[in-house]
Image (cartoon, rainbow, N blue to C red; front, side):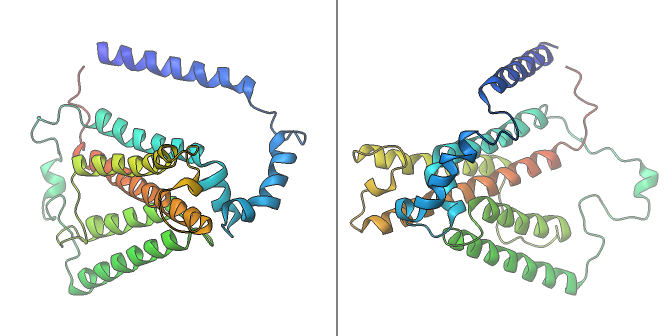
Length: 259
């Protein structure tokens, strides 16, 4: 009971904070808002010179608004942790999976694929590999074209989901437990934040890529910095999706929580 009361209090406080923050936001559709005037003009005119990235979206998200993107990645990691905390309660209770016997009569066991064929097993493996390769391409190509860490992380998680849900009896390309996935999501956020701290330790501002401690030109420093945070975002997004999926799969019954 106390846990539910605390949860309700947290929700009320969070909603109150959200509504209070509306006063600090510009009016929707206001053509005189900074984002529609001098800010966007500066980004468009100076992005290539300042960030050395030909992709304007990457320049804005990974450089001009790098701290904001870090917080977005942190929010995703927090969502995964919250999913584990909410869905992972009372994990010691056995036989959580409750299905009437008449439903299971003449059907495969829960969690076992009903379509065991060589074609399916082979094709699922090939599809998962192709998705994973495309995810790597999206990650590496994100600085100069469409793509980036969020898309690459979602694709990597998709390759895992395809292998696990379509062919659960085959060995996936990579395997992660719920605890390891949550830890890996935290590592992704840490890589992003540590990249910013490296620039601070070298005498610059947070995420000032030109101050990274590598003996290359300023242009390549920006490329390295953007790639480092994209890798962190990719790992964080992929691991968070897998963490939430694992939490949902392990919590297949909800009527045993009487607190």
